[in-house]
Amino acid sequence: MSLLHRGKTKDVYSHGDHTIELKFTDRVTLNDAGEIDPGGNNVSEVLLDGQGFACLSMTTAIFDYLAKNGIPTHMVSYDLDNLSMVARKAETFKPGLEWVCRWRGTGSFVRRYHNIPGVSEGMVLPTPVHEITIKDDEGGDPMIVPDSIVALNMIPRDQLDELIALNTKTMSLLRDFYLEKGLDLWDIKIEWGKDAETGKLMLIDEVSANGCRAFDMKGNRIVGQELSACFRA
Image 1 (cartoon, rainbow, N blue to C red):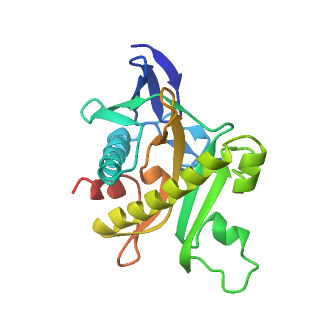
Image 2 (tube, one colour; image 1 turned 90 degrees about the horizontal axis):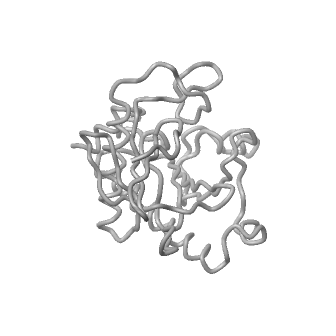
């Protein structure tokens, strides 16, 4: 088994013809101020004990739940003791897309629309707001609309329509799962790809505390390893 890629928080190893092995680590990312920030672009030289286990355990619990509800993911198997996941090899949509769903206004949503009357932190949105962004750290992960995705030959129209429907179902299931855990999910970011062998759509990467905002029913934000622990109960 050889190292194929060293990511910010995960390492990718060879495994089989159509699979890879992801090794979750205790590395964390920092923002430019040196603070721990899942969206940061700088990797800390100091490891955060238990971080890899927290991310893997939450991701596998969510992937198991989604699979039982008909959502395809890249996960094949996992080993919590060894902080590893065997996953199907995936092709991503270049230059990389992230899919966001919001049930409350916060973060970049509020900053983007702050001049519109009624926009405030934590505002309840009457319907879920679905966004697609381009993975571009330097450009601030700009949003892109479906027509542009098709026009730029990133995803064919028929496949994009299928993906939008699949993403909408997945986001609804995710919110339901968080509610089962006593959590109010404000927003979440996930990533889709295609099975490199079959071309079928599947949820990839991880779904962990690194990519969402969640609160308990008293309005207290739950983050990091504390959030991950909710999914092991």
